[in-house]
Length: 273
Image (cartoon, rainbow, N blue to C red; front, side, top):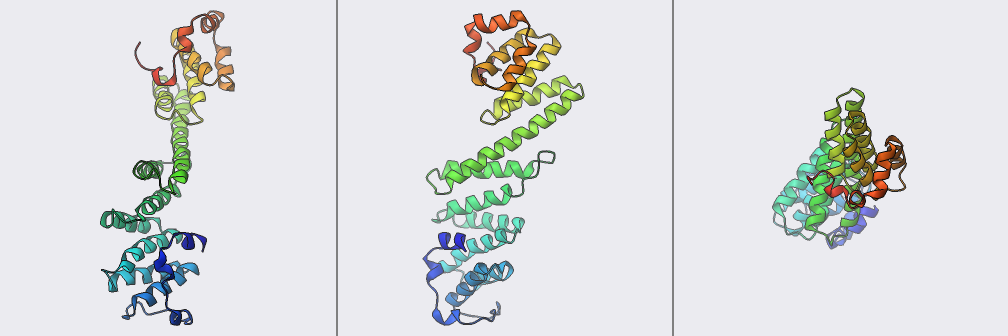
């Protein structure tokens, strides 16, 4: 298994040749050498026999709790749970590992694997986003604590995808409120996207929706201000083209004449002047 070969410490190769020839699965209750137990656990994992692998890794910890093998076996048991799509058990095992071994050299991998357990349970935007928020928190923790980790790059990519997912949820709710005529609730959702999810692909549409709402309410000054920010930050966006069409000639001229509008950024859009 590629992941196993890339991840396991030298412990994984500290195997006893005599163990490799036996095809019979060990009795986990039997007292055996730590090398034999760990060998068979690693072999079961490699063979995608995840239940057996988990039992054997846990048996390593039970029989040899103070050995270096036990610490590694804790992490590998969690990995076996993850591969078996038993995310709840994996998360509990990883939480325990992180609590007990905060200085372990593979602690960054434990955080990364924990984040993956949440990430792979993310549902579509029409459903509750509790797992999405947990994934975001876990990825951000890894990136903050271990910026030089070999897992940080992938964690950053998945964090951005997670943010985009959460922004998509806000947009979905905002559009629903807008269609239901609940204008203030819609405004709050679109503003949340603009303020809290600035790096996502949903910001241009959120700005356009605000222009649309402000024009409907007759708040032309606010509409012009938001349109200016949209045009300044996303000049080639079709959402800006749609917003520009909503403005009257006076507002369009304001965009050209009043450079103060152009100086505004998404960061300062909703701050008082």
